[in-house]
Length: 85
Image 1: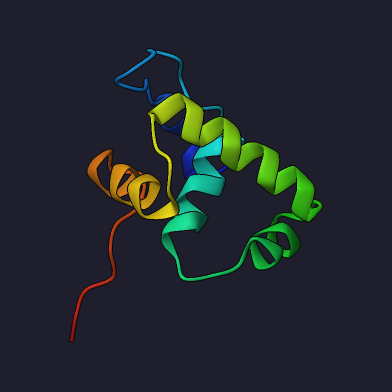
Image 2: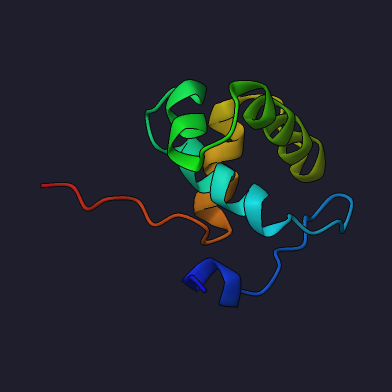
């Protein structure tokens, strides 16, 4: 069990539909400057699976770009930005 498993499900402000645990993991990865291929390899799934999850995330949070999704993730506390030196 991971910390994400223990975290409460995050309700989206627009539709009220919560993100699944896997969607929260993918969204946290989207904040990082990595490709979808890298995310897929990290999560042991195909790139198409990640693309499908990303589309679902965008729909649920009302985002249309990766930057919007990343900003939403940081605002929702799903990802803590790295401290700047």
